[in-house]
Image 1 (tube, rainbow, N blue to C red):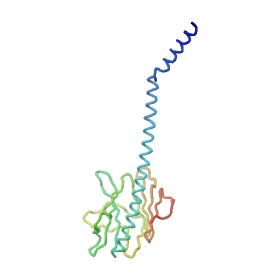
Image 2: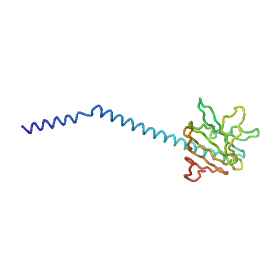
Image 3: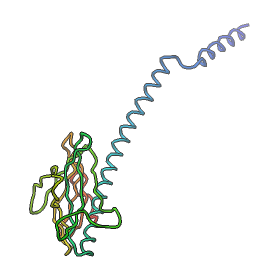
Image 4: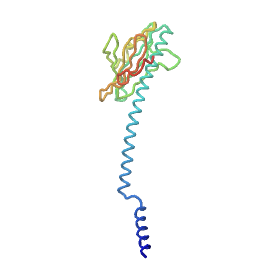
Length: 200
């Protein structure tokens, strides 16, 4: 008889343990999963923005190299004009490629759209500094006037030496700096710090 009683107690104990999780345990598990998911998505989101911003800087550096080559091949100066635009109530920066003609500066007449206007991402402020003009004012332009580009790629192969900074509009932190020298060689500096050799 004692063996039978011990077996019954053991069976009851197993039934209690195998009854599943309590409601509190399930709620705690769901809360932990939600917290982990939100932390991971925040990290992935900020990392995605960082990669997108770096791709934007690299794209601009590559396009600058292309414009310099076009200037040398065509024997005509090219330029980059950076302006501030109003995009549905939000101010964003726009880079407009120009070519010097006899009548002045105008959009280049190229068969492809490599030098099409480029709209920068929102949430950043741009700061342009040139060797001969350390504090270039980037503002909105009069749509009736043809702009004079701030950065010029001369037909002889020279470039207006300078740097362009991407600054976080909320924190004021320097995100990226793109530098280029008199010969058009570019250097990408994440956070303003040099980490590698010139890319161009």
